[in-house]
Amino acid sequence: MADIQALKERFISLYGADSAFPLRVFHAPGRVNLIGEHTDYNGGYVFPAALTFGTTMLVRERSDGQVGLASTNFPLRKQISISSVAFDTEDGWTNYPKGIIRELQLRGVSVPGCDILYSGAIPNGSGLSSSASIEVVTAFALLTLAGQTPDKIEVALLSQKAENEFMGVQCGIMDQFAVAMGKKEHAILLMCDTLEYKHVPFRSGEYRLVIGNTNKQRGLVDSKYNERRAQCEQAVSDLRAKFPELRLLGQLTRDQFNGAKHAIADDTVRRRAQHVVEEIDRVLQSMKVLEQGDLAAFGQLMNGSHDSLRDLYEVTGVELDTMVDAARRVPGVLGSRMTGAGFGGCTVSLVHRDAVERFIDEVGRVYRAKTGLTADFYVCDIGDGVQELTTA
Ligand code: GLA
Image (tube, rainbow, N blue to C red; front, side, top):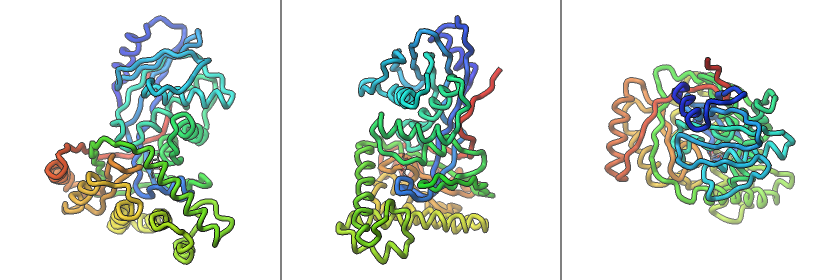
């Protein structure tokens, strides 16, 4: 957790101490997805968990209809008028809060003018949902300032809409949902079509979740992501020859898909769809084995997920594959996979607690030797979703 006192001092040095309004502090975590990748926008299951680190937001109302935006992570600062909020590429990170303000206004919320300071502990572009974290904390805080008691699922949905429409990234609901609805020591089984969900205690016993950051700069990720989405839509459209009512790939069982997949004309599109259908099945199998406490079987499913993302969905790349291969060679590792959208970003591995040190050392060394890049590792605990922090 960030040092709130230091952030308050920073806030005052940026915006001044003199105000009739209280300074309030909110927090939203990052997330790691344990299994169920590229299934959310196909109406399938995902199994993410909120992290204990994320984005802290200090906010204080002001009465002149202006919004001050500053971050401890970026030099860029902006002051905008609440009545003219528009996307501008030059405005960099500030487009995220602007997108949320715009979305709230479209929903009839009267967003007050305010000064904001963010402090993010999630490395940007790491695939741990730094964007969803800033969106969700902003939506939750501004709704609270507007006098509402925010519904966290609504917060997730409106944040996703802002990302889709204001930022132009066609992401699914997983990240915003996990960041809003996370629960300490629990992962979330979420059915992305209906938003039915269940908090599942993540009992990892003697094993720890270790995130490995490839630190690979992700280029063109948004366009490749949108391309995968379009390929899934193409698969649905072809499969309607067999299932006229089909809306989403997630509606098909493995058997139904296998019986109908020849209806998909393009070989690449067929492989994309196969990943989605099998990955959803892997999430359901994970629930069974985790209920039985069979972590080794869960590790195997994690491995299967990565291999499918590498071979069928083709969203891994040399950095993620190198890191995962190195991880699986370390004794005490039950499973290792990429997490998030892919094309760089992070891996998540299930590592025996006595092997964590060796894991970080060996994976880091092999990864550097093969890619020339230095990895970062975080041994992670599962934290809570968005909330207002009460600090004296
Ligand atoms: C990104 C998106 C999510 C999800 C994952 C892949 O994190 O924001 O909606 O599609 O990729 O599972």
